Image (tube, rainbow, N blue to C red; front, side, top):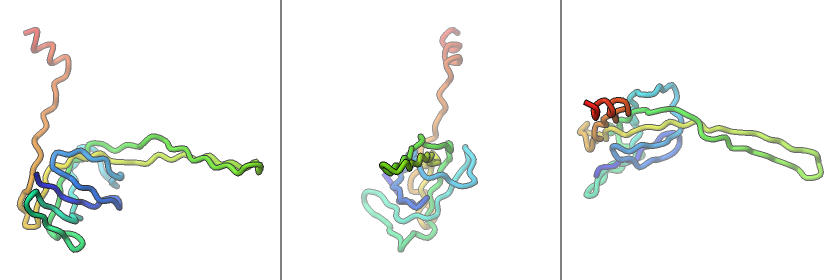
Length: 132
């Protein structure tokens, strides 16, 4: 099973093809679009590994953006006792959910590819097929 270590949003992720990840929000991105990560720190499989200095030139990872959203609200409450001083603040971190499709080596060869996902049929379609 091939994997790659990518860097995005100031963080590093070890990814495999077909995996679904929650990462920092990607700027100017719309759902159901393809994304390429070109900052690959390392890639390999069980037998061999290619490590970059600091990144591997020519290697890339292709992914599909599933959706952009926000996390739950985190409340920040600060209080200084006996000073009648308090401050309440909230924060919702934005994130993107992506699905890794392909991992490419530095010569452009596909190391691993995710299986095609077939959409599950809706309940009405299943009922119609059973009743026929």
